[in-house]
Image (cartoon, rainbow, N blue to C red):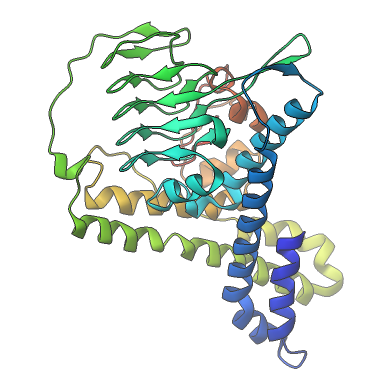
Length: 350
């Protein structure tokens, strides 16, 4: 509400009654920035304050520490949607350090869901989309909280999970939809839930495209990721035009609001699969394009499978969307009966 209030104050100062549409266009960018900055500041203060006194151990679910852990998790989950341009990029480690997470130099972090004060990420580590670190475990009215560590140059795959008290070893790998084992040796790999040791021969690659990119690639990636704010402005502009269209319809608005909203949400998919180095130019562009889908198209989503087929997705019959809260809450829920994952969307399973 406070973030929306900041945006409305900016809009009120710039919108003129004589030319409301023109004023709304002028206020679009500053109002969107005011909303995002205010939301980020409030989230930062809330997570920092709620992390005070959050310690390891077993605590009552309805106690103070249980309430703090649950609230921090919910705030971190919501931030991945509202502040999506800050995730899966160069700004992500900076943002997570501000929230209290310990992150080493050169680490790559995507849309991680974590208790920041109890998570440590080593130098050069890689956390893929929708990873879960230092979550709480519930059982019998009690909540178990512990630290989670990701070692130096370790890899935690998409929807991978590092439970309380566990750590991914240096140079280790935990695969997609897999859990971190209780004990693991340096350089070992695991896959599955429960985890099974996976034979893996580490291959040497070009370090300039992985752990030691040159400055020119850093600047190029920063410029590309700066474009992530454009889909946010476009989504806000689409909302303004939608409201203007509904106002122009007058008495017909209740009858025609459905087609107007469907037209506003009409986007096609823009992400294609490929394989390349982490610091290859097309990787950053593809990430930005997928961000446009997540920031724009999924903000105007509908639950119909036919609607997603119109956007270009290949969706089989009788495929249902699983519970969003469950997918964000555990890797086990993401690996449930709904086995379809949406390309470019790290949170939703289909």
